[in-house]
Amino acid sequence: MADEFNNRIKVEPVKVSSLSGSSSEGTPESPSIATNATKKGKKRATLFQMIRLAYILTIFIVGCLSIVGSQVIISFLFYNDEARKQQMMQFTKQNFVILFVHVTSVASPTELIVTFDDSAALKHAVRLDKQTNRFSVHLDPHAIVIANHQIYSDWLFIWYMAYLNKCADQIYIVMKKSLEKIPIIGYGMKNYSFVFLSRNWANDRDYMNKQFQKISQLGPKCWLLIFPEGTNMSNTTFSRSNKFADEADCKPTQYVLLPRARGLYMSCKTLGKTTKTMYDLTIAYDGHSSGEMAQDIYSLANIYLFGKGPKTVSIHVSAINIHTDISEVDFSGSDAAKSLTADKEEQEIEKFSSWLTKLWHKKDTMMGQYYDTGKFSNPSGKEYRLQLRLRSRLEILNVFLIPFLAYLFGYVIYKFVRMSIAGH
Image (tube, rainbow, N blue to C red; front, side, top):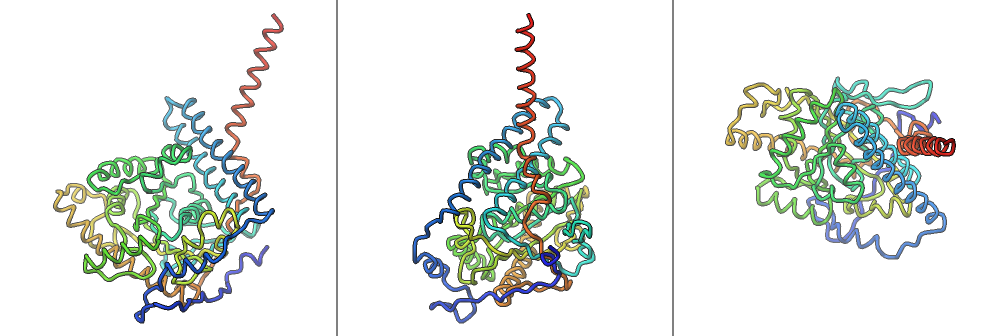
């Protein structure tokens, strides 16, 4: 088992394909060509894959129904006790990531390769428990977390980092409003105070402020996860990003999308009075070249049906102090920072957008280095292999605990009533 956690890793450099039509300036090769190259033959699931898929679908559907059922039971039992209700909802929130980690580890075992910058705040971010021979994460449990968006399941690996940091029950994700309409799961996510945006500033501003205020008051632990790009990288979104760069007279990116600043600005303004920490995560996946879109290679069907998910997920973590490292804007939560006119706010957003764009160009450079060498630059000199798996196999039973106890309680009451009637 110790071999799984060696601090030194061997990573094969990712080979960049030499498809025709690539730019002499080093821009990404045509994603559409690369994507078409992967579709030369229809994949057919083997018997083992079909059995595995049947198990995954069963455990996932029953698990989701169990979690939502737990939420309904909790809402009924604690409708007049908001504090206890939130506490119990957080238990089901952790069960949500437990369910996804279990399903993913069965479908396509994955290893996280985590590196850090040389910030003093990250010096002891990962520690090895000598008794269990497992790593645990020790980051600020009250922080804003940002990342580039490569595939649909990026959030899972970040949520797993929160799980290792013992704050998985207090993570809040900013996402597209359309996702709240997903049957069953959408209802469950709304109960977790996730923030659903329509991407219209006029409609979203007051809603975001209200939601972020609520989140900041829920307790000492809080990871607010935002993908500033707004969507995962695809052929369409990449073209839109570069078109926007041309219109804004901004340097185009090659491996990430240009970020949107307003949602992150509002979160920093609101949560800045309770935290000074922002973690910037840069995520890359092995097994594809710079000319291929990760979302095409690692689609949900490929991961959960064919078991062809990423073997390794590289995550580089940088720490940012939003009170001191972003001099352009006051995020301290002071009275002066709060009392802004609409014009002043727009000026601040513009300054913050400039800062964020520079940060994303740095991230773009890091992604280019990853495609060239197969790994991120590692100033701290430390790398950690974290297998995507639960602390205990029995932990998956937590997902079904509340409905089981409700059924057991109902069964005992039913038997007691029947015995009473029979006695009379």
